Length: 214
Image 1 (tube, helix red, strand yellow):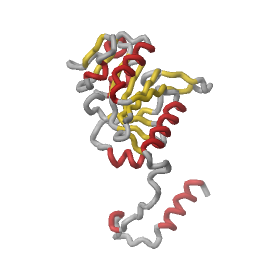
Image 2 (cartoon, rainbow, N blue to C red; image 1 turned 90 degrees about the horizontal axis):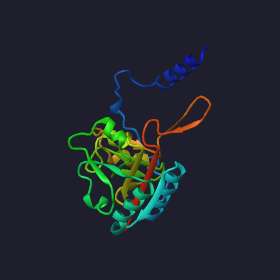
Image 3 (cartoon, helix red, strand yellow; image 1 turned 90 degrees about the vertical axis):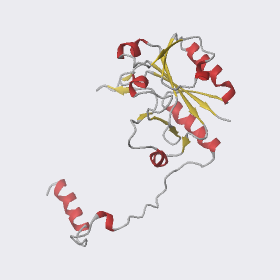
Image 4 (cartoon, helix red, strand yellow; image 1 turned 120 degrees about the vertical axis):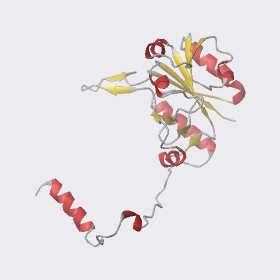
């Protein structure tokens, strides 16, 4: 007997007492499992998010709202950024202190123009503390997916506590399935058959995250 036969046999046994006319939606399924495994406090969630972002080789910067523009300018200067891709509706004050050339995406920039830019600065829709994941959905200040995938350096601003959730289930409950979702867990990286890590293959090679908190 093959493994396939064993699995199918167990499924048939489990369904043997189910009436043929019964539909999946006829019987409610209890979903009382834990949706998160992290503390609920906003400070603890922010610390956990920072820890996991750092594990994924992202560089994390923390500041309050008053210091955001100075922090963004300092990060871009440290990276040697001269040109920045700016998504539609990105708050102007975020780049007010940065000495850079801004490339707006109206009309849409070509892939070549995005690739030639040093950095892109975006916001996000939310961030997940338990996994160190940032989610973009193409909303204001985030832009279309290509903007956060083509430039070599991505600087993303996360506003705490309103954009920080504990877990993936909590994130899914707040996200719209009709939006173009991009889930980012650290800089883009992959490994070849010899397990040599290569960064920047499927997205930015460098990820800076600015956590803005009260």
